[in-house]
Structures are given as structure tokens and as C-alpha cells.
Image (cartoon, rainbow, N blue to C red; front, side):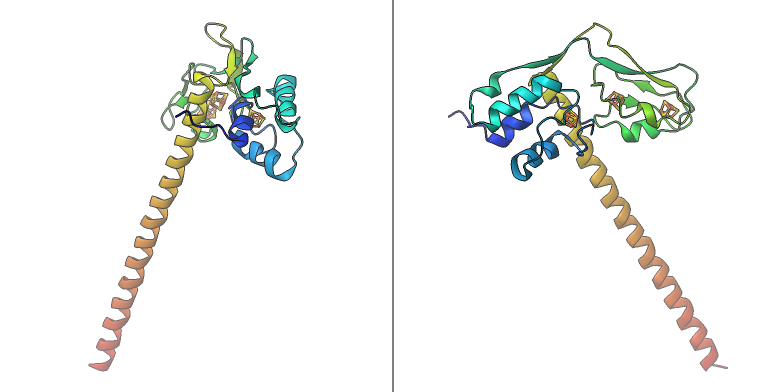
Length: 199
Ligand code: SF4
Ligand code: SF4
Ligand code: SF4
């Protein structure tokens, strides 16, 4: 049986899945939630522009067929790192919502061209200004909803889960370190006390 798409999913599908924060929300889904539950304005998605705005308006007005419409940004731009200028600070890797940048500390970084969705989040963050937006290799269009936009969404949520897991693991390791330190100090205190009593 075909699963019925909820209104929230339809609103999410109307958004480009760049996760670029230009709407002032953390990601497309957060903006969709705000439209549905907090009466947020429907014209805040800058990349989706009037196409997104029109679909959202129909959805809010109760038109149920709107989830089949596709939107498009022709020849979308992707990030590029100027060769030899990158100092390998890794800031852009942390900022990229879809893991489209690879590189090691103090080494040249690279964009995975077919994974970059053109969100521009990395550009302003580069401390040596060696990132720029350029035309994508094959002058492709960014289309949503599509396999391309779904992949972008999935990569974003995968990264989110991984970062949460890393933070959790770090906090467990830190807790274990604190406990070990606490036990070490307790043993030292006890040893000193015994030494004092045996004088
Ligand atoms: S594409 Fe960017 S501006 Fe549009 S909804 Fe998603 S995060 Fe917000
Ligand atoms: S490489 Fe830059 S522009 Fe491309 S998806 Fe990542 S943060 Fe966005
Ligand atoms: S932010 Fe700039 S300098 Fe730092 S790793 Fe990325 S491209 Fe290189």
C-alpha cells in the first residue's frame, strides 16, 4: 500500500534541501516545522525563491497535488578551493552540512564536486579567503524533489547523527578521565592520612 505523504513532508519536499540556513533556521526541516506549526512566513527560503514560495502557498491553501511539482536552480554553483592557498585549518569541513569537503589538518582540502549543493556556508568561514563559488562541472541544474535533493538531505542527517555520536563519545571519555582523576586524588589523600597516623 502506498504510504500517504503528510503535510509536513510535502512542505519539506517543496524546499531545496541545501540546509543553508538562509531562512534563519538550522535546516530545511526546521523551517518546514515552523511554517506548519508556528505560522512562519513562507517567503524565507532564498534559494527556492518564488518557485518554493508558490508551492508553499498552494500547500498552505490546501492544494494536495502540489507535491508532484519540481523546482529548479539552473546551473547551480559549487564551492572551489584555490589550490595552494588552503592552510588546512579544517574549519570548512566542520561547517559543510553534507560532508562535501575532504582534507587533513595542515594539508590542502578539496571539494567533492558532485556532493556540494552550493549552500555557500563554507565561503565566509575560510580564514584565508581561499574559497569561491564556481559553475558546477557539467552545468547541471539543482532540482527538487529529486534523487539529488534526497541525497543532500540524507547526507545532512547522517552528518548530524555522526557529530552527535562523536560529542557523546567525547563526553563519556571526559567523564571517565574525571573519575580516574578523582580516584587518584582519593588514593593519594588516603596514603597521606595513613602516613600521618603511623608517625
Ligand atoms: S534551502 Fe536553505 S533557506 Fe531554503 S529552507 Fe533549506 S535551509 Fe532554509
Ligand atoms: S562545500 Fe561549501 S558550498 Fe558546498 S555543500 Fe559544503 S559548505 Fe556548502
Ligand atoms: S577553511 Fe579555507 S583554509 Fe581552512 S581548510 Fe577550508 S579551504 Fe583550507
